[in-house]
Length: 426
Image (tube, rainbow, N blue to C red):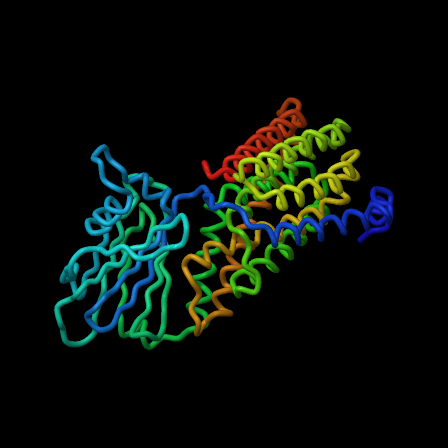
């Protein structure tokens, strides 16, 4: 770090303020971890998961989806969501062995599931054949109702090795040789598969992209960008690992709501730092959070009072420190680290749903984290180059106004996600 940068950090944050901020971050994060909130929707993307067990000519699939997603399939006939889902799966999940369809044994059956989820089991029986079995798996579920839907499938061969596949509207088929998969136990295969899943997850997670955009809009030097990226990477890597290894089990609904809060707070800070109004913005945030806390105490809905209290502490400790752009940029690495911890739990949710192969746990975890990092770097590079071009280009009138408008839009989007997810309506 250069002497100039060090001096600016020292000027922006006195020892007392820095200690207060760090203490508040720790306190609010502990409060968040201990909070339990009502179930609400997680990522706003449409997704489902399945685990397949293939033993010779028998195939069993367990399909998991959020109950809210299943309502996309509802028609006008008076059927329950569960019944509609079972009929849909029976008509849209197919598997073949050596080009011969494997018929469904009986009907799809509903299984016990976590709150807010639906689970179903389908059993398939293939005709006995000699030699290697070449499977063709097709998943058509939900794509008609939601073309942006993604499906993650984990396939276990003969109770040994597993492989993960991603299904999208444009890629509904996967073919594989059971014998080859069963005999392969490759660190690099698992690493590459989960790297692809990590990249797909960061590119498809619009809330994570919005947060990165909000972080970068205020920055002017590449050194600042590197500090921000480092803080965010360290933060989400820690909690991603802790959550996947089940060392910490956060409240998923609270995580997804607070991800929206992180976007709104950073975007609002961008504007407040330029106009020296962050103290006023702080009061607005605190008033809104206090109203939510009061509502939770009276009607027992939304985020818990403890979670709201943690967010109030964090807001009061952090936002007033951003008196101008220099002070906002100086403390932003700490912010990116703290909020990276929250986003790491969001990244971990997809791994918790699809599961990790026990025989390649570390390669899967490393691969997913690498995929997230690679996707993040692409987003950061494109955003930084765009912002730099806007500031340098003489053809763009009032680039500052455009960046302020972007911050305002991101703030509105973050507030919408925060409130809607807090009350389970998005």
